[in-house]
Amino acid sequence: MPDTHVVAERPAQDQVATYDAIVIGAGISGMFMLYRLRELGMTARVFEAGTNVGGTWYWNRYPGARFDSESWTYGFSFSKELMQEWDWKEHFSPQPDTLEYLNHVADKFDLRRDMQFRSTVTAAHWDDAANQWTVTLESGQQAKSRFLCTAIGILSAHTLPAISGRDSFHGPAYHPARWPHTPVDFTGQRVGIIGTGATAIQAIPEIAKQAQQLTIFQRRPNWAAPLHNARISKEEMEQIKSHYEEIYAHCATTPMWFIHQADRRNTLEVPPDEREAFWEKLYAEPGFGIWLGNFRDIGVNEKANAAISEFIAGKIRQRVKDPKVAEKLIPKDHGFGARRVPLESGYFEAYNRDNVTLIDTLQDEPIERITPKGIRTTKQEYEFDVLIYATGFDGVTGAFDRIDIRGTNGLRLKDAWAESPRTYLGMLAEGFPNMLMVLGPHTARGNIPQAIEHSVEFQAGMLRFVQQHNYTRVETRPEQVGDWTRTVIKAAEKLLSSKVDSWQTGVNRNVEGRAVRRVLGYNGNGVHFRRTTDEVAKGGYKELMFR
Ligand code: NAP
Image 1 (cartoon, rainbow, N blue to C red):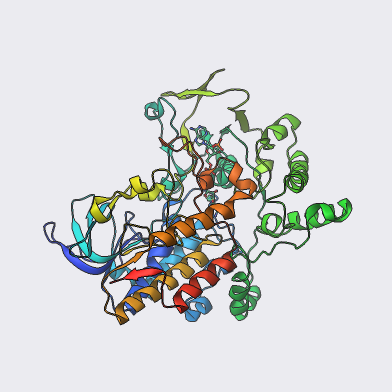
Image 2 (cartoon, helix red, strand yellow):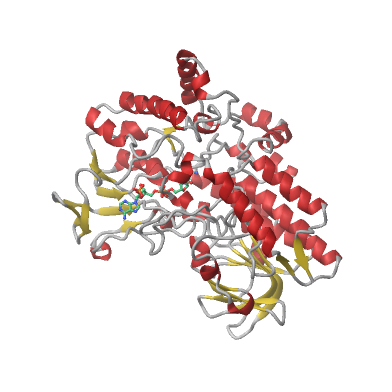
C-alpha cells in the first residue's frame, strides 16, 4: 500500500505537543481506540512503528499468512455500514486482503490524520503532579497526554533464535514478522527454516512449492489440523451480510467468541464409533471446530485428550508417506489443543515432496551454530541461500517490556510484572494511572478483533464516565487487582494447556528470564468476562478509583 494518505504532521523536534490521549500502535486495537476517542471529543495521537496501519497484518507478510478464524467474524462490527460494504473474498482471509480491509477502514474513517508512522515509542513516564503521561519516541520526539492507551498486540515482540553465529550468515535471513514488503522469490533457492509453530506451518507448504530445496529444523512438533479454506461466492457473501447480527450475537455466547461451541458431552461417555464419526466430521470441516467445537473435556481431561490426540496422530500417519517422518511430526510432549492449534493447508503433504527435508533437532541433530554458509548441526553443515527464523514471539508481556513504562513514584512496569503480570481485567495496572490496555495481560482473548472491540467499548464507556464527572484520573484498586489475578490463575489451573511450555504460558528461551511458566491470559469463559465488565460499567465503575 503506497503511503500517499493524509497522515498526522510531525511537530518540530523540540516541540512537545499535548493530547487528551496517546495511543501506541495502529493495528486493529489502536484504530478502533482512536475512532472511539474521537467520538468522545478527545484529541488523540497514535504513534506507530510501521509505515501504515494494520499491526499484525502490516508486519506478517510471509507466504501463506492468513486468518484461522472465519473472515466474517474477524471484521469490525461497530459500523453496520462498513460490514455491509466489505466483501470478504475467502472464508479465511489471506494477509494481503486483510491489510487491504484495514486500509479501507482507515480511509473510510480518515484515521491516518491522527496517526504518526515510523514512530517507535521507547518510553512512557507518568507525572503524578500533572496527572499526565510523557511519551518519548526513538527519534527523541516527546508528547504529553492525560491518557495512555497501549494497543501493542499480544504477538508483536518477535524473537530471533538465541543460537550462536546468528549474525554470521552471509545470505538474507528473515523473521516472518519482519517480512519484506516485496514478495521474496525462492525459485532455485536452498531455504532453511527454523521453527514449526503456526507461522511456519502456514509458510512451509507455500515455500516448498517454489524453493529448490527446503530444510525444516524442528525442535518440538505441533499438532495441526486442516483449515479447509474456500472462496466466498457473491451469493454466500450476501447471505453472510444478511445474518451479521445473528453471527456476532452467537459469537458473544461462545467461550472464546468464535463461531464454535463445544459439544456438551464428555469424550469417554460417547461410544468409540460415534466418537470417531464425530471427529471425522470435525476434521473435514473448516476452521477451529476440531479444537473448539470438540467434546467439552478434551482440554482438561488427560484421557479424553489422549483419545483425540491419537485420532489426530492417525491422520498425520495417513497423510505423511514416510512413517519415520510422520512419527517425528507427532507431538509426544503435549496433547492436541494444549498449545494453540495451527490450522494448515497441505502442511503434512509438504513432507511428501522430494525437495523437503525434516531435521529433528531434539532427537537426532541438535543445531550447534549458524555459520556464514548455513546451519551446522551435530552431524553436518547444511548450506543455504536463505534462512527463515520462524521462531515466534515474546508473547503478551514482551511488547510492554520493550517500552520503558513508569508509573507512580517511578515504578517500572517491567519490575512490577517481573514475576508475573498483575492487572484488573487486563485493562488497568496498579500504580499506572490513566493507562488503558487493549489486549493487556489477563484479559479474555479468543477471537482477537471481538476481544478488542469489547475491551475498547468498556474503556470508552469508562472515559465517558470520567468526562461526565470532570475527573482527571482513573486507577485500579489493589484489592481488585488481587481478586482478578486470583480469578485468572484459578481459571488456568485445571487446563492441560497450563502444563505446557508455549508463548501462551510465557515461555520463550530466546529471551533472558523467560524460561518459567506464567499465566498470561484469562482462560475462563468469555461470556463470563463480558458479564463481569458489563456489571462494572452498569454499577458506575465502583471497582475503580477516580479523582
Ligand atoms: P511459535 O508457535 O512460538 O513457534 C515458534 C517455533 O520456533 C517453535 O517451533 C519453536 O520450537 C521454534 N523455536 C524457537 N526458538 C528456537 C530455537 N532457538 N531453536 C530452535 N527452534 C526454535 O510462534 P509462531 O509460529 O510465530 O506462532 C505464534 C502464535 O501466533 C500462534 O500460536 C498463533 O497464536 C499466532 N499465529 C496465528 C496465525 C493465524 O493463523 N492467524 C498464524 C501464525 C501465527 P519449540 O516449540 O520447541 O519452542
